[in-house]
Image: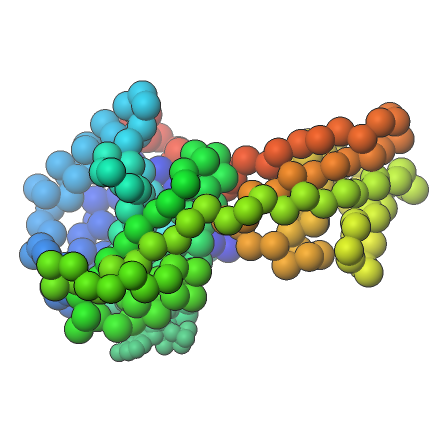
Length: 238
Ligand SMILES: CC(C)(COP(=O)(O)OP(=O)(O)OC[C@H]1O[C@@H](n2cnc3c(N)ncnc32)[C@H](O)[C@@H]1OP(=O)(O)O)[C@@H](O)C(=O)NCCC(=O)NCCS
Protein backbone atom coordinates (compact mmCIF):
# COMPACT_ATOMS: atom_id res chain seq x y z
CA UNK A 1 0.00 0.00 0.00
CA UNK A 2 1.28 3.47 -0.93
CA UNK A 3 0.43 6.51 1.17
CA UNK A 4 1.58 10.02 1.98
CA UNK A 5 1.96 10.98 5.62
CA UNK A 6 3.38 13.75 7.75
CA UNK A 7 7.01 13.26 8.77
CA UNK A 8 7.97 12.93 12.43
CA UNK A 9 11.10 13.03 14.63
CA UNK A 10 11.56 9.25 14.36
CA UNK A 11 12.14 9.52 10.56
CA UNK A 12 15.78 10.73 10.79
CA UNK A 13 17.44 7.48 9.73
CA UNK A 14 15.01 6.89 6.87
CA UNK A 15 15.58 10.47 5.65
CA UNK A 16 19.37 10.01 5.59
CA UNK A 17 18.91 6.95 3.37
CA UNK A 18 16.65 8.94 1.01
CA UNK A 19 18.94 12.00 0.68
CA UNK A 20 22.00 9.93 -0.32
CA UNK A 21 24.80 11.15 -2.65
CA UNK A 22 23.26 9.11 -5.48
CA UNK A 23 19.80 10.61 -5.09
CA UNK A 24 20.92 14.24 -4.57
CA UNK A 25 23.13 14.22 -7.71
CA UNK A 26 20.51 16.09 -9.79
CA UNK A 27 19.33 18.39 -7.01
CA UNK A 28 20.88 21.72 -6.01
CA UNK A 29 22.12 20.25 -2.74
CA UNK A 30 24.49 17.77 -1.12
CA UNK A 31 23.65 14.50 0.59
CA UNK A 32 22.14 14.93 4.04
CA UNK A 33 23.88 14.42 7.39
CA UNK A 34 22.22 13.57 10.71
CA UNK A 35 22.20 17.16 12.03
CA UNK A 36 20.54 18.42 8.86
CA UNK A 37 18.00 15.59 8.96
CA UNK A 38 16.93 16.74 12.42
CA UNK A 39 16.58 20.38 11.27
CA UNK A 40 14.71 19.24 8.19
CA UNK A 41 12.19 17.29 10.26
CA UNK A 42 11.79 20.19 12.69
CA UNK A 43 11.15 22.57 9.78
CA UNK A 44 8.66 20.13 8.23
CA UNK A 45 6.75 19.93 11.53
CA UNK A 46 6.80 23.75 11.85
CA UNK A 47 5.44 24.09 8.30
CA UNK A 48 2.70 21.56 9.10
CA UNK A 49 1.64 23.63 12.13
CA UNK A 50 1.36 26.91 10.19
CA UNK A 51 -2.00 28.45 9.35
CA UNK A 52 -2.48 28.93 6.51
CA UNK A 53 -0.12 26.17 5.57
CA UNK A 54 2.20 27.07 2.70
CA UNK A 55 4.49 24.03 2.61
CA UNK A 56 3.72 20.30 2.64
CA UNK A 57 6.75 18.03 3.15
CA UNK A 58 5.23 14.55 3.17
CA UNK A 59 6.71 11.09 3.52
CA UNK A 60 6.00 8.59 0.73
CA UNK A 61 5.41 5.27 2.47
CA UNK A 62 5.23 1.90 0.71
CA UNK A 63 4.01 -0.99 2.87
CA UNK A 64 5.13 0.86 6.00
CA UNK A 65 8.59 1.72 4.61
CA UNK A 66 9.40 5.44 4.23
CA UNK A 67 11.00 5.47 0.74
CA UNK A 68 10.73 9.10 -0.32
CA UNK A 69 9.60 12.66 0.23
CA UNK A 70 7.10 14.61 -1.88
CA UNK A 71 6.71 18.36 -1.42
CA UNK A 72 4.15 20.97 -2.34
CA UNK A 73 5.21 24.62 -2.03
CA UNK A 74 2.48 27.22 -1.96
CA UNK A 75 4.80 30.03 -0.85
CA UNK A 76 5.47 30.93 -4.51
CA UNK A 77 3.49 32.86 -7.11
CA UNK A 78 2.35 29.48 -8.48
CA UNK A 79 2.47 26.28 -6.40
CA UNK A 80 5.25 23.78 -7.20
CA UNK A 81 5.96 20.12 -6.46
CA UNK A 82 9.27 18.38 -5.76
CA UNK A 83 10.19 14.81 -4.87
CA UNK A 84 13.05 12.46 -4.06
CA UNK A 85 13.12 8.70 -3.62
CA UNK A 86 15.58 6.37 -1.92
CA UNK A 87 17.79 4.96 -4.68
CA UNK A 88 16.87 1.32 -4.04
CA UNK A 89 13.18 2.18 -4.59
CA UNK A 90 13.59 3.71 -8.06
CA UNK A 91 11.91 2.31 -11.16
CA UNK A 92 8.74 0.93 -9.52
CA UNK A 93 6.34 3.79 -10.19
CA UNK A 94 6.47 5.12 -6.62
CA UNK A 95 7.50 8.70 -7.52
CA UNK A 96 4.70 8.93 -10.09
CA UNK A 97 2.16 7.69 -7.55
CA UNK A 98 3.51 10.12 -4.93
CA UNK A 99 3.17 13.04 -7.36
CA UNK A 100 -0.37 11.97 -8.28
CA UNK A 101 -1.32 11.95 -4.63
CA UNK A 102 0.09 15.35 -3.87
CA UNK A 103 -1.76 16.66 -6.94
CA UNK A 104 -4.95 15.24 -5.46
CA UNK A 105 -4.23 17.33 -2.37
CA UNK A 106 -3.36 20.42 -4.46
CA UNK A 107 -6.38 20.33 -6.78
CA UNK A 108 -8.81 18.62 -4.42
CA UNK A 109 -8.67 19.78 -0.82
CA UNK A 110 -6.60 22.93 -1.50
CA UNK A 111 -8.41 23.88 -4.71
CA UNK A 112 -5.28 25.33 -6.37
CA UNK A 113 -5.68 26.50 -9.99
CA UNK A 114 -2.24 25.38 -11.23
CA UNK A 115 0.86 23.49 -10.11
CA UNK A 116 4.35 23.71 -11.66
CA UNK A 117 7.45 21.53 -11.54
CA UNK A 118 10.97 21.46 -13.00
CA UNK A 119 13.97 19.20 -13.40
CA UNK A 120 17.49 19.31 -14.75
CA UNK A 121 17.61 18.23 -18.42
CA UNK A 122 20.20 15.57 -17.49
CA UNK A 123 17.59 13.95 -15.22
CA UNK A 124 15.11 12.53 -17.79
CA UNK A 125 13.57 10.06 -15.32
CA UNK A 126 12.14 13.05 -13.44
CA UNK A 127 10.59 14.42 -16.65
CA UNK A 128 9.03 11.04 -17.30
CA UNK A 129 7.51 11.05 -13.79
CA UNK A 130 5.96 14.47 -14.42
CA UNK A 131 4.51 13.53 -17.83
CA UNK A 132 3.07 10.28 -16.46
CA UNK A 133 1.40 12.27 -13.68
CA UNK A 134 -0.19 14.61 -16.24
CA UNK A 135 2.20 17.60 -16.39
CA UNK A 136 2.78 19.39 -19.70
CA UNK A 137 6.26 20.68 -20.67
CA UNK A 138 6.38 24.49 -20.85
CA UNK A 139 10.00 25.03 -21.99
CA UNK A 140 13.23 25.84 -20.18
CA UNK A 141 14.12 28.38 -17.53
CA UNK A 142 17.45 28.96 -15.74
CA UNK A 143 18.81 25.60 -16.92
CA UNK A 144 15.72 23.61 -15.91
CA UNK A 145 13.07 21.91 -18.04
CA UNK A 146 9.79 23.39 -16.79
CA UNK A 147 6.29 21.87 -16.53
CA UNK A 148 2.80 22.95 -15.56
CA UNK A 149 -0.57 21.39 -14.88
CA UNK A 150 -3.92 23.19 -14.65
CA UNK A 151 -6.59 22.03 -12.22
CA UNK A 152 -8.70 19.38 -13.92
CA UNK A 153 -12.42 19.95 -14.40
CA UNK A 154 -14.40 18.12 -11.69
CA UNK A 155 -16.32 15.01 -12.79
CA UNK A 156 -19.95 14.88 -11.80
CA UNK A 157 -21.32 11.33 -11.37
CA UNK A 158 -24.77 10.12 -10.26
CA UNK A 159 -24.85 7.05 -7.96
CA UNK A 160 -27.80 5.12 -6.58
CA UNK A 161 -27.13 3.28 -3.30
CA UNK A 162 -29.53 0.34 -2.84
CA UNK A 163 -29.63 -1.66 0.40
CA UNK A 164 -29.62 -5.42 -0.39
CA UNK A 165 -27.98 -7.27 2.56
CA UNK A 166 -25.33 -4.58 2.28
CA UNK A 167 -25.45 -2.02 -0.47
CA UNK A 168 -25.29 -2.29 -4.23
CA UNK A 169 -24.08 0.81 -6.04
CA UNK A 170 -25.51 1.71 -9.40
CA UNK A 171 -22.99 4.11 -10.89
CA UNK A 172 -23.89 6.23 -13.89
CA UNK A 173 -21.67 5.22 -16.82
CA UNK A 174 -20.36 1.97 -15.25
CA UNK A 175 -21.44 -1.60 -16.07
CA UNK A 176 -20.19 -3.05 -12.78
CA UNK A 177 -22.32 -2.76 -9.68
CA UNK A 178 -19.90 -2.67 -6.73
CA UNK A 179 -21.21 -4.14 -3.51
CA UNK A 180 -20.28 -2.82 -0.08
CA UNK A 181 -21.26 -4.19 3.31
CA UNK A 182 -23.20 -2.39 6.02
CA UNK A 183 -19.98 -2.22 8.07
CA UNK A 184 -18.05 -0.51 5.25
CA UNK A 185 -20.82 1.98 4.81
CA UNK A 186 -21.16 2.67 8.54
CA UNK A 187 -17.77 4.40 8.65
CA UNK A 188 -18.23 7.02 5.99
CA UNK A 189 -20.74 6.66 3.19
CA UNK A 190 -19.36 9.40 0.96
CA UNK A 191 -15.78 8.13 1.16
CA UNK A 192 -16.79 4.53 0.42
CA UNK A 193 -18.97 5.59 -2.50
CA UNK A 194 -16.36 7.91 -4.01
CA UNK A 195 -13.68 5.21 -3.82
CA UNK A 196 -16.00 2.79 -5.64
CA UNK A 197 -16.85 5.40 -8.28
CA UNK A 198 -13.17 6.20 -8.92
CA UNK A 199 -12.36 2.51 -9.34
CA UNK A 200 -15.39 1.77 -11.54
CA UNK A 201 -14.83 4.75 -13.86
CA UNK A 202 -11.01 4.99 -13.66
CA UNK A 203 -11.08 8.58 -12.36
CA UNK A 204 -7.57 9.50 -11.12
CA UNK A 205 -7.09 10.92 -7.64
CA UNK A 206 -6.25 14.47 -8.75
CA UNK A 207 -9.58 14.92 -10.58
CA UNK A 208 -12.10 16.38 -8.13
CA UNK A 209 -15.26 14.31 -7.93
CA UNK A 210 -18.78 15.59 -7.37
CA UNK A 211 -21.21 12.80 -6.41
CA UNK A 212 -24.97 12.94 -6.78
CA UNK A 213 -25.93 10.20 -4.31
CA UNK A 214 -29.44 8.78 -4.14
CA UNK A 215 -30.05 6.30 -1.32
CA UNK A 216 -32.86 4.75 0.70
CA UNK A 217 -33.21 7.91 2.75
CA UNK A 218 -34.62 9.60 -0.31
CA UNK A 219 -33.44 12.67 -2.16
CA UNK A 220 -30.21 13.06 -4.06
CA UNK A 221 -27.35 14.36 -1.92
CA UNK A 222 -24.64 16.35 -3.67
CA UNK A 223 -21.22 15.79 -2.13
CA UNK A 224 -17.88 17.22 -3.16
CA UNK A 225 -15.13 14.80 -2.31
CA UNK A 226 -12.01 16.16 -0.65
CA UNK A 227 -8.64 14.80 -1.72
CA UNK A 228 -6.33 12.28 -0.06
CA UNK A 229 -6.26 12.28 3.73
CA UNK A 230 -2.79 12.62 5.19
CA UNK A 231 -2.63 11.28 8.72
CA UNK A 232 0.25 12.27 10.98
CA UNK A 233 2.59 9.46 12.11
CA UNK A 234 2.10 7.96 15.55
CA UNK A 235 4.17 9.77 18.16
CA UNK A 236 4.83 12.87 16.06
CA UNK A 237 4.86 16.25 17.75
CA UNK A 238 2.08 17.84 15.70
C1 LIG B 1 13.55 10.88 -10.48
C2 LIG B 1 12.97 9.92 -9.46
C3 LIG B 1 12.11 10.70 -8.50
C4 LIG B 1 12.15 8.85 -10.16
O1 LIG B 1 11.56 8.00 -9.19
P1 LIG B 1 10.93 6.57 -9.60
O2 LIG B 1 10.15 6.08 -8.45
O3 LIG B 1 12.02 5.72 -10.12
O4 LIG B 1 9.97 7.02 -10.79
P2 LIG B 1 8.87 6.12 -11.50
O5 LIG B 1 9.23 4.67 -11.33
O6 LIG B 1 7.53 6.58 -11.04
O7 LIG B 1 9.04 6.53 -13.02
C5 LIG B 1 10.33 6.63 -13.60
C6 LIG B 1 10.19 6.69 -15.11
O8 LIG B 1 11.41 7.22 -15.64
C7 LIG B 1 11.91 6.31 -16.60
N1 LIG B 1 13.35 6.44 -16.62
C8 LIG B 1 14.25 5.98 -15.71
N2 LIG B 1 15.48 6.34 -16.10
C9 LIG B 1 15.35 7.04 -17.25
C10 LIG B 1 16.25 7.66 -18.13
N3 LIG B 1 17.58 7.65 -17.90
N4 LIG B 1 15.77 8.29 -19.23
C11 LIG B 1 14.43 8.32 -19.48
N5 LIG B 1 13.51 7.75 -18.66
C12 LIG B 1 13.97 7.12 -17.57
C13 LIG B 1 11.42 4.95 -16.11
O9 LIG B 1 11.48 4.00 -17.16
C14 LIG B 1 10.00 5.30 -15.69
O10 LIG B 1 9.16 5.47 -16.83
P3 LIG B 1 8.16 4.29 -17.33
O11 LIG B 1 7.22 4.01 -16.18
O12 LIG B 1 7.49 4.86 -18.52
O13 LIG B 1 9.03 3.10 -17.63
C15 LIG B 1 14.08 9.20 -8.65
O14 LIG B 1 14.98 8.65 -9.56
C16 LIG B 1 14.83 10.12 -7.71
O15 LIG B 1 14.45 10.30 -6.57
N6 LIG B 1 15.96 10.70 -8.18
C17 LIG B 1 16.77 11.57 -7.35
C18 LIG B 1 16.06 12.85 -6.95
C19 LIG B 1 15.46 13.55 -8.11
O16 LIG B 1 16.01 13.58 -9.19
N7 LIG B 1 14.31 14.21 -7.85
C20 LIG B 1 13.63 14.95 -8.86
C21 LIG B 1 14.22 16.30 -8.91
S1 LIG B 1 13.48 17.28 -10.17
